[in-house]
Amino acid sequence: MNREQYAQYQAVKAFMRHHYRHFNAAAVVDAAEGYRTFVNQGGKMLVAMAGAMSTAELGLSLAEMIRQDKVHAISCTGANLEEDIYNLVAHDHYVRIPNYRDLTPEDEHELLSRHLNRVTDTCIPEEEAIRRIEEAILDEWVAADRAGERYFPHEFLYRILRSGRLAHSYQIDPRDSWMVAAAEKDLPIFVPGWEDSTTGNIYTSHCMRGNIRNVHTVRNGIEYMMVLADWYRKQTTQQPVGFFQIGGGIAGDFPICVVPMLRQDMQSDVPLWRYFCQISDSTTSYGSYSGAVPNEKITWEKLAIDTPKYMIESDATIVAPLIFAYVLAD
Image (spheres, rainbow, N blue to C red):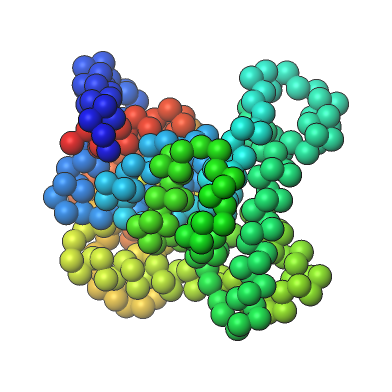
């Protein structure tokens, strides 16, 4: 982090502390201060990332959080895993659609004909992003398959990034890619439900074609949970572990469940999560996990009565960079 960046983070923190005094704004400052205090006192933080945060270019702030040891593990959807790298190699080919709410079915079909995959106001270019990564990762899959080796989805992407094979295609500063930062740190990543991602679909197609002979060449979700359990047990023997959740769904529910699994099913006396924050715009309703209030997690033996809990009901694309800037202002 250079001096100019640090000054920017300090300015954001000062602005927030002065203006964000009530309601959701106050919750943002409280959560950010809680995060800052937690990691400064030696706590480790797992970030759970749902939605399309990589296409929203969260790497602009998340990458520096990883480099500064403010994030110690990530659970994310397969989409967030791959879309950070799509942006890395195809940023200049993305198309923004500011008036996306006005699109007709015919307009959407026209985007399809141009091989543009829309995510709200941003279109991911299929040829420049998806197919470019497919070519690189297929070589890794096939090589591992032929050698009888098996790796997790994020490990295959780490191998590609570390090889330098894609470097000539970078269209953004690699320091703004959270996956590049994670690969440099060898950050633990857990990707539940990877199969429903674009890359997971591509992998399935190559298994069906016979290009990959062992479908287990890519390791699966149960194995991810086992590795996560080992990571959690090891970490909590040394310091408390916190949980910072962006959005809801499987990216959050999968990792937070490691605690009741260890305590109830393994009869292992591990501590509960010692910090919890969720940014979500999901309405609290019957049966909604994404919109459930944090106290509900006490009944599932995920959080303790005295675990600091923060619920920010807002847009994570706005809130998460603010919290990260506040934490980085130290």
